[in-house]
Length: 335
Image (cartoon, rainbow, N blue to C red):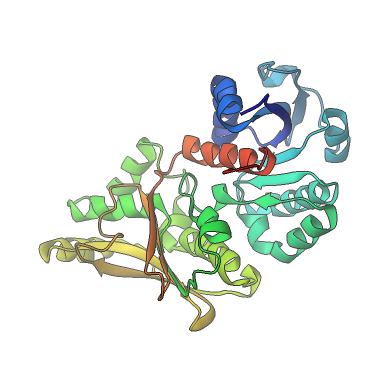
């Protein structure tokens, strides 16, 4: 591969995922350039309280040395960024700002790579229109399963394959918790262990309620079939204290209880999350702890399965790195 090009990046959000993203690029920049022909370079980091501009290869300074936040437009102009990366929390309070900034970047022809789910879920059509108007791309791998490349399969490998169903365990926290319940833990103990290991958030309610799994499958269904995520209905069975008995009973029958999120072309605009006993041979049965999996049902081609991708800030950061390379790397020959 020839000389690598530089892809300047503006990063929004400097929590665990944002820091892991910056650290990985610092460690692996030379190798990424050699293997993929592009060197992503963070030129600005933005947070709610301030921002910092960076020279080539300069480390991010302590927050006490950051300046006041400028507008995103000014920051994009000053850095000449090709990519706007979003690693802000998927919280209701930040949704509108995340949507507005993504739309602004796309409208300027700047690609958007995001691990933030809330604004993608609520502003899908608006983001798509802005991307078309600006001739830019938006990539959401980090929002649909962190290191699990489920979104990539739908955008590329499954085109023309006739995918009709999606069946998934896309939330590593709840899979880990269910396995701990099957070992005799209480729900509280299982959640605390997941938090201790960095698998679960401080507030795991979206995981245990099924809301997070449903969100990810809503986004996958939008990629697969063009559904507007805002129009998708959700039915979800939560993991509660009484679920422990079901998990233990499943184990006694040689099965594993899983929170399975599903969607089908036969049931338009509906995503269901159900607690199911899975049997050996089922890809969802084989998951270990916080691993995730998606089974794409393609009647003519056969099921296509992607699994693994443990839940962690680094997993989400690697998805952001992958998507950044995908939208900026040269595309010639086999690539």
